[in-house]
Image 1: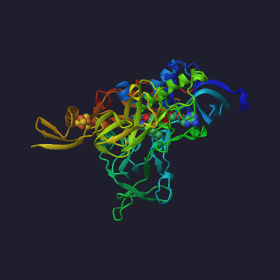
Image 2 (image 1 turned 90 degrees about the horizontal axis):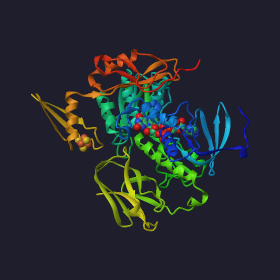
Image 3 (image 1 turned 45 degrees about the vertical axis):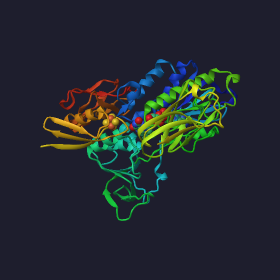
Image 4 (image 1 turned 90 degrees about the vertical axis):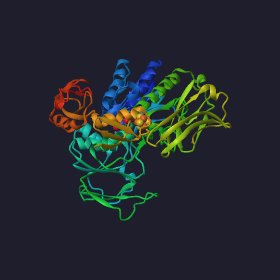
Length: 431
Length: 123
Ligand SMILES: Cc1cc2nc3c(=O)[nH]c(=O)nc-3n(C[C@H](O)[C@H](O)[C@H](O)COP(=O)(O)OP(=O)(O)OC[C@H]3O[C@@H](n4cnc5c(N)ncnc54)[C@H](O)[C@@H]3O)c2cc1C
Ligand code: SF4
C-alpha cells in the first residue's frame, strides 16, 4: 500500500462524482457539458454501469431513446459519452470518507489511500436491497435464501444456477423479473407472495413475467415458516388480514429449494450522513433543494441514493440536473453562492408521501422545476394539485395513482415569485 | 362459437382489464379506455410477441457472461425453443454490442445479438 499522504497534500478536483451507475454517469456527462473541467468519477466495482450490469432484461430507456434497451445497453450509451468527453474515472476504488468541507478519502487495493479536496461533490451511490434480517420471518436460516438482486447478480454476471424450485416473497420489480429469468433457465417458480393487497411492481412486469408463465401472484400473503436445516426444503405461506397478521388455517406449504426476497430497496447513505446533511425520514435519502443540493453547500445528490426510482430514464434526467448544478457551483465564487437561501419547504398532503426536491428557492430556481413524488396507496380518479397558500396553481386529473410509480408536477418560476415560508407551497391529492 | 380472454393492458399505468372476444375472424375488445388497449388486445390474441433476453458464457473475456437478446420480438410460443438454442451457445471475446451470436434463432427470423461489449482479458 502506498504512503498515506497528509491532508495538506490532498489533490484538488473540480467536481467529484461518487458512484459510476446511471446516475453518476449522467451527472458527469452533464457537468462536463455545462463547462466543468476537472471531473472525477469514483466507482467501487470493477466496471462502470452500476446495477444495470446485472439487469439484462429489456425495457430501459423508452423515454430517453425511444427504444427498449437492456440494462447493459442503456449503460453503454452513457459510458461511451463519458469516454468521448474524456471524463476520468477510477474503478475498484471506494469512497471511505466525506466531510462537510468536501474532503474525500478514497481507497483502492492498487493505490491505497488517496485524499481529494473537491469544489463540488455529487452523491450517486445508488441503493441496496433490504437485507433479510430486516424481515421478521421466523425459523432457521438455511442456505437457499437470497435477496432477488443477489440472485440476479449470481445468475447474470457469475452465471450460477441459483435454484430449481423457487418461492418469491415480495412483488417488487426485481422479484418479478427474477421469476421470469429463473423460469427461462429451467427452474419452477411456484408462487410469488405479496404482503400488501397490491403489487409494488410495474403492471407490465406482472403481465410479462408472471402471467406469461402462469406463475400465481398471491396478494395479502406472507411467509410464516421456512423449512430445512442446511438447505431450504420448503416454505409455508399464509394469508394476512388488514393488520397484516397471518390468518390461522390459511397456511400452505410449498416444496422448494430456494426462497427469493424482493422486499424493497434502501438508499445507501453512509457517506451522506458523514457530512451531517439533513436527511428525509420518508425517502431515506438526503433532503435537497431545487438544484438537488443537500443541506451541505456544494454537496449534491441524484438517482437511487436520493430516492428509489422505478425508471432509469428519470434517474438520468435527475442526475443531469445535479451535474449542471454542481458544475455551476464549482465555477462560482464564494460571494455568488447564496449563503442562506430563502428556500421554502414543499408540504405534502392527502396521500403524497414526499417530494424531491423537498424545498425550493423562488429566486434562485430556473424557469421550471420538476418535482417528483410517490403516493401512499392506490388512488382512482383523483386530482394532483399544487397550492401556494390558498391559491391553486395547478391541477391535473389522474385515473390511477399507485405507490409503485413515480409521479411528477412542474413548478413555474413566474408563479412562485415572492413566495414566503409563511404562505407555504403544497402538493396534494384531492377529489 | 366464441372464445373470450381476460387480459391486462400494459401500455400505461391504468392497466385496464380487457375482455377480448374471438368470434371466427371477428375480434372485439371491451374494457379498454383508449384505442391503444384495443390494439394491444387484438395483437395479444392473434400474434403475441416478446423480446427474449438471457446470457451466454464468454471465453477469454473480462466478464464471464455475455448478456444477449433477440434483435426483434419473436412469437411468444417460441420463447422456450429460443432459450434452448441460447443455452447451447457460447462465444469468444472480444465481443461488440450488436454482434450476432445466433442467426435466425429457432427459425423465427430474428437473430440473437450481444447486448454489451466484452474485452479480451490480458494474459
Ligand atoms: C438489485 C437491483 C436490481 C434492479 N433492477 C432494476 C430493473 O430491473 N429495472 C429498473 O428499471 N430498475 C432496477 N433497479 C433500479 C435501478 O437501481 C435504477 O434504475 C438505477 O440503476 C439507479 O441508478 P443509480 O446510479 O442511482 O444507482 P446504481 O446503479 O446502484 O449505481 C450506484 C453505483 O455507486 C457505486 N458506489 C456505491 N457506494 C460507493 C462508494 N462508497 N464508493 C464508490 N462507489 C460507490 C456502486 O458500486 C454502484 O455502481 C434495480 C435496483 C437494484 C438495487
Ligand atoms: S387501454 Fe389505454 S388507458 Fe387502458 S391501460 Fe391500455 S393504454 Fe392505458
